[in-house]
Length: 388
Image (cartoon, rainbow, N blue to C red; front, side):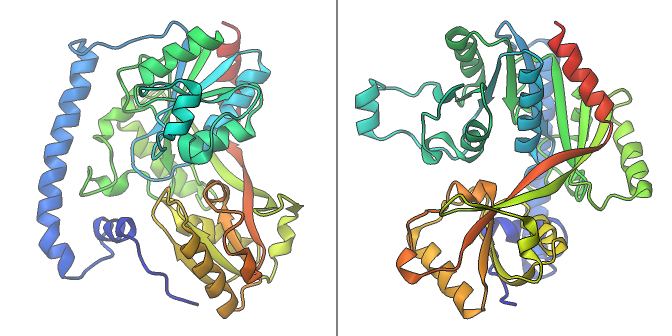
């Protein structure tokens, strides 16, 4: 198997996890620890100012649910937001998802002139009926959610208060789901859902940049529901240990566990669907630009795929034409009969680049989120919100 070249982000994670024992760790580590302590103190002070009322918090006038995490990297927010949106819509709520639109791009001058947009403002990705923006302008996750969900409004705005007010004013929504909203305390919420990755729950116990924590662990006390995600390999013993650790910071939150379950393969080029069983003994190349690529590889290997080579890019990486051509060339050289990407990668993977090379088929793996433990708590929360 071809050895994958690490991105800067992956090198940093290797450093903070302790896997990198080279001179870099001993040279840079003291600086990361010092920076982490300073950053942690600033975040702790900021949170205290919001809690005590010294910094103003805003409420848009409807029910607000925050879905976020206490660490950086992929914890599975998008599938949870999608599952929650479907359940609330089915229960009769009119839902809008408000996202920051991470790594989205500003519309072109031509687009701005056509739509008479001359300043940064809330962008409507989906009005509940149709997609209005491209993945590049909307951002990966908002576009995916808008593409997947029916009768759900999706908007992006770096100012989430403005975005929430816009959604309520223009679309008359009665429920706002704040995507990646745990640290966005400026917007008041009625439910706080926090996601914890079962594989690295507390970010090595250190705050950025010395670890993966976005804020001190005491921030978990704000959660009323905690989802332990990626729990495929979580044993009962490890589950109890993790719950005990969570209870040190939050005694009352409902705790649920969930995992990804492969549903089908979808062709990036033709959108034709194939069964997951196609992967059995199939030589494949894995290409992805997500925060936790190893988990994706593990899922594919569990389906019987023969991973002959892989190439990882930084999270939210937008694939360039020459990179796609290099991917196809590498796949051919290693005898890969298919290229596998995630659904999030698929929205950034050109359908036209490199076709003259007669590349192997490119599929993305469609996964669904399944709750292993605590499903009754999720149902109760949804029913309680829908009854208001």
